[in-house]
Length: 237
Length: 337
Image (cartoon, rainbow over the protein chains, first blue to last red):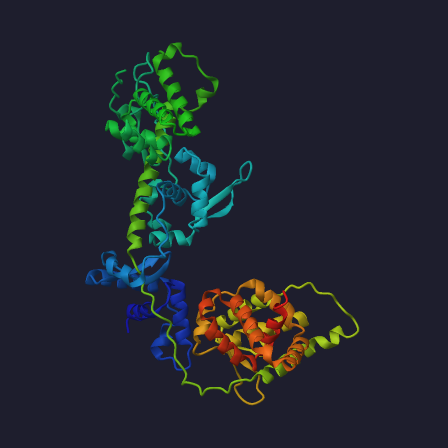
């Protein structure tokens, strides 16, 4: 029996999403049963990597079969979920009353900053957003999407915030690395141009070095030597 | 003018407004003319004032930063006073642009999160029911009568006899029958059936035992619970009543007031029921009307909605009376109040 089909049967009958570890525990339990078959015993010590690989394969199989459901990994746990296009009928089936209300723009922005920059202090979030975030923080804390994860070792020891597993569930993310454009937004700040920002030495009316958004991402600050840049046009004022 | 007002509502802060202005100009953030931007920004802040919108402090800070940048641009570099802190610090223009770029990226990320949120709203997980293997239906267990219950509660009360011998303690009235009813229902909803002694395992003294017992009797009377004895001499088990009667359905939340009264009334149950029997013997003529009054009182306390049905209910209650000494006691005590 193929490992992936055993996993499929388990996830098909499971009442909650199962993590790789939980699945592996099930293999161990099945192997230690009194009437365990040779096959069950042989899978007693199945490796995490093998389970993960089998799950990925299974998910790909389902994707290729283009069924109305797929195998999804959310917050590290696997489960079968329906495809979004079938929601009109599923909403009728399960009822939509219990859905939490959607998040506001402010909450989403705050959440995005915390998600990419975690652990992060409230002040750091405010610096990026340029506004006070007390109210929004309260909302997302209450909804359990973020939590206090420690204190920063700076003056005043402000609280640090991180996202919770519920955050991943809410957005259907596999893990934090699954966030869109994660590498770009994680820790790398926009780099300062190394050259002076004025072209005409006499006047300060020139715009700063003309960086494209793409140029801002590279890690090395020396990546954009001023000499290679086209001379920025002085702004008409 | 009025379309501006609509726009204000969506700005999440000064950076958001700046991004909107830049987008309107259709230029790259890095190529934006900050002086022009400053003018536009301040125009907006002025507009906000005209509309009597409360201008948040952050907007004013941003406006002053932009004014500062603009003023710097008006002077040739060699005539500018070098601000000490600025020599090693950031160029204010660069700092602002860096902030804008960073904010823009997170704003875009927030938009992507929003897409994910919407997508996730339409995704439904498979949640199969719990797989249960039902044992063969058990034969119905014999029901338990009031005397079995009394014997059982007496044995529970024995626990406190030795402790209280010789000494007297004054207790605060901590427990009410309605609270205990909730406790009993909760305990039973967690499991299918509870042993009689388990209900009293945590009771601290006689009063609490009596309270719990009264709650139990009340719930049995309301057909919420059923008591069974699996085999002769085994411990009584309490479970949910199998087929709830209509009265159980209408019973939702007990009105706490009368039940508290009932508690204080019901503790000396023996005395009052003795009194009531004496009363009955004394005048059998007035009994009919009196009973009716009592029943009305009692019924009103339990369920106000059924006032119209009083006549019917009275008959029912009359029938109940003989088996249910406690409710008699309640009625008797409540009447004078």
